[in-house]
Amino acid sequence: MATWRLVSMILFWQVAASIIYYSVFAATPFFRDEFQLSGFAVGLVVTSLTLGYAVFLLPLGAMTDRFGERRTLTVGILGLSVGALLVTVAWSYPALLLAAFLLGSLYGTAMPGTNKAIFDNVAAGRQNLAMGIKQVGVTAGSGISALLVTWIAGILFWQAGFITAAIFGLLAAVLFFGFYRDDGGSGAASYPDFGGLARNKPYRSLTIAGFFLGAGLFTTTGYTILFIDESIGATVAYGGVVLALLQVSGSVGRVLTGWLSDVLPGEPRKSIGAILLIQTIAGVILFVVVAFSDTVLTATAALIGLGFFVLGFTGVYYSCMATLVGPDEMGSATGGGQLSLTSGALVAPPAFGYLADIYGYQASWLLLAGFGCLAIGFIIYVIRTEPPVTRTAAAVE
Image (tube, rainbow, N blue to C red; front, side, top):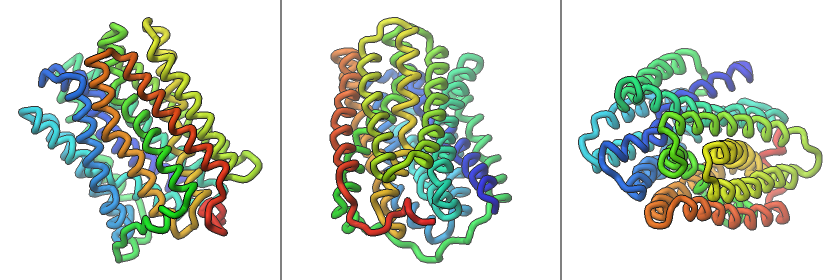
């Protein structure tokens, strides 16, 4: 399969899957009203979603190795579609949490399957750009879901957005299974060996940074619409537009930084790490700006900027990871890195919501700025520390 045809098909799958997954984030104002939730309880919905993702991420990664990405990604998008329909029939808050958990668990097919497709089929000199383009599917899908859920809710009812997303997911499953081809998998499932990776100091430092980066990413996505509605005073529909623009900005960031990672001279670990460091520093500054924003224009501009830096870092995060581990460790390293990102999303949204309930949104955004400051220190360590491997995944031609 031609490289860019493969990347296009993976991008299509990622968009469809992310529309469904991120519909939960876009629907937080409707969950709040439907079930009379506090900010903390809204955060637990996001936590339940990401907990399902975290719990099943590694087992589904092993299944991807065994059966190949074509079958696992098809099953994943089918399961996501069913999960979206379950959200629409949730009759209570506990039922909503369970539906969110089940939906999130099937999204666990995304990172192992799509990353396997990229690293197995794209040459090293184009992997970073391909990764950035593939990651656009996440922000594009999230942006579409923000507009879809809020727009349809204004015309019909909030469940209509999830039903529409589920129908699109079913269509995507048919098309992907019909046209995508892979090698069928290895036929044997294996689980990541984290013992060796844990002894890799720069990799360990990067995954710790990933915890704090993931906290900022997922919390920003989950609370943008509520913040615009409750703190700034604009409508939920406008909040949906802001979230969509934030995702567009993140898409630009992912492609641009992916391209820079391929073309910048010098040692890849240092050059790619420097890009990630700049993104993190800019994110901290913008979190502070959002915290003190009191007008629609200022908040909108700052949030769009956050999209570029905070939502735009994931491709560079994995590109940097490829400069720290050997070629045969990249699959395990990816699983550990994604688990770290997701773990940040387990604790940060409820904490953000609790602070918003008690002290206001200013304290909540400053919490994310503090997380970013912690990430900065760990990224600097990555840049300054040589990995304990003679040949890295990024060097494979």
